[in-house]
Length: 187
Image (spheres, rainbow, N blue to C red):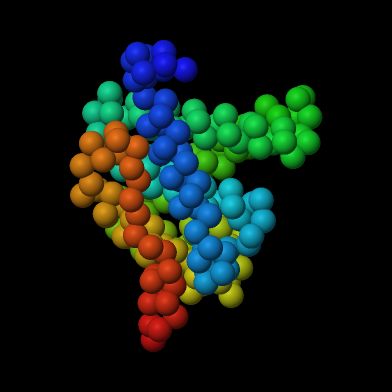
């Protein structure tokens, strides 16, 4: 037990803290109550993807060494998804196929969300959120716009955040509840 104090810090604790923060943000009850994200495996998965995307979007502007932090968090995400699939009873033979779909889903969302944020296109971001998070349910337009506003503001606040904060395992994001109430009160 005492030997752990003499080990070099290999960053695992930071990676676990960052990935834990992604999962914690994705479990914020307001996503499932106020925004109406389905409280299902798929809905929770989408929220994890949104928050993982936010971290990776922030890290893409860093140097190669700092971006490696994102790769390690992505690896932790993959290990977690693999373990969750197995826990849900997916067979060893089917896990690689499902993991391929997880990766395709992730990269598809990153492309859609990244492109919209890079163009500062709130409408395109809301459409991507509507399609991915709400299954293109047109009745959820206000919720998709509110989530797009949340994603945009989170990306802006993370852009202003020093890398050292992330390197310390901290991943502060705005509270999502205010964005849905703003969207509902908009004309």
